[in-house]
Length: 310
Image (tube, rainbow, N blue to C red; front, side, top):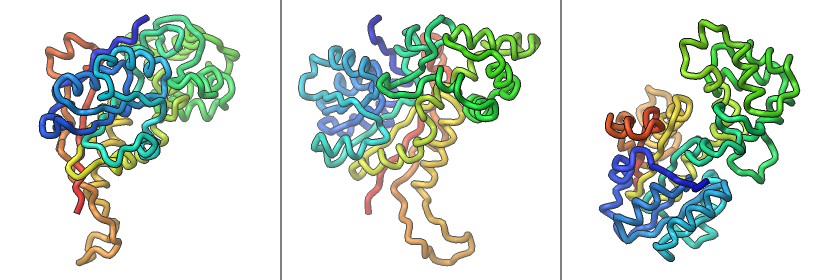
């Protein structure tokens, strides 16, 4: 299938990135995906964009889609956690803006064989980078019951985590997404199943996060991305669940006020200096028109931080 991409919160992202003030600048799309956000930047400015993604399919499809923009677009396979090293290799000293659209891409969800969706039967994979070794099958069949319960509870905020973990261990080995869905369906009480959109949603989210290490390095990734910004450059981050948004919010707050001195200390002695200011006091969300047209925008929140150099 085509690597199509309807970007979420497009107008909010372009405004928060402040592209109109730096039309000849250099921007980084750290989660390239289908290239929807990158294409908006290229359409509306004369800027250059470096697109980073760990999915080889994304790199190939976005490169084809954005070929008309020539040398203004450059795709790099990699993880946005390593943005400083990636930009150094491409000869970029500082970016005017960085965009991170966290989580799984539309293409990955809509491609059954990737194993992200609980609606289609496919191998238990869930790797964003298919050259990585760890798969959802490895997690489901190899982790202890206690570790599975922890992952389901912490990453999926699943209140039936212990019971689902018990049923998974009891039903091993599991090979496909539908194997897992059936086990979850058995584990979650019938009355609860009627209350939620799909009983497997939270568990699939948790496993995907574990397989791809999505939360493990997020704080470091945000700090690294900020370090790549020029003075006045902005870091714009889209999140899709409370765990991501909480880390983004707290990291932005720490970058704005990194002082670790006791509250009653009259003068700062820790020496930690602010990296910039938070632009979004509260996260921005999609308008009803967008949520009606694109269901995946309903849970999206976007926050922005501006780098300020002394």
